[in-house]
Amino acid sequence: MVVPVQQDTGSAPPLPGLTAWVVSPHRLVAQAVVAALQAAGSPVEMHAWETLDEEVRAGGARAGPHHMVAIFDGLDSLDVVHDVSRLVALGGVRVAVVTSGPALRWGGLLEDTAVDVVTSSTNVTQLVEVVDRLLAGDRLMDAESRLALRVAWQDALDKRRHLMFAMRTLSPQQLRVLELLASGRQVASVAEVLGVAQGTVRSHVKSLRSKLGARTQLEAVAMLRRVHEVDDGADVVPRPRLASADGRELVRRR
Image (cartoon, rainbow, N blue to C red):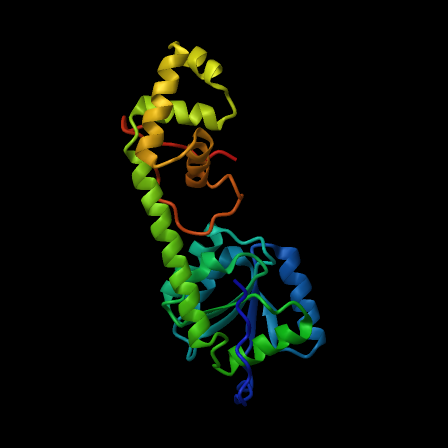
């Protein structure tokens, strides 16, 4: 999903003296963006990602919000989504998230109008516009784009929860069989690891496929990989921890 910058409809210029903080967990990215924007005359300054919480708290009594342009360059993850969420919860912060990565993962933050997501700003001129409009108090997303992204995020979250629930219906042995198959082992190898007959493994596979609604063994394996988010390498929605029926926590594999 591409989230364009809302078209400028004649917004007021930024108030004199306002400065946007350019932040990123990737220091070199932030430095490069700040240098380019300052050369273009944009009122920005770099702030360290690691100390944002402290800086926001320290300046909390100041009039007006902190304006942040958060640059992720497609390298964002659920961890940085949580970081931005924590900043917004402190209050007095407006954040323009600029990313070339999947916008879907940011959908959970869009209920709060303090956050806008932009994925179409790829050059300095466009970033200057983002800064100017952020400082002027404009919205960077139109209502339709904001709602669509929130709905898509919720839909993805619901699907993940449904899949997690299905996985929890597996017995410890069925889950272990599925984990071993997902690691690339064949039925004979799984039987050897578990110390059971191959027919027993096939029986487990038949039962777990039925519980998961998987038509094939490969589909069941793909479902487990989606839970662990290794099939596409991307975290797009929060994932509650998955425990097996015997209380053993499943760990993510990379």
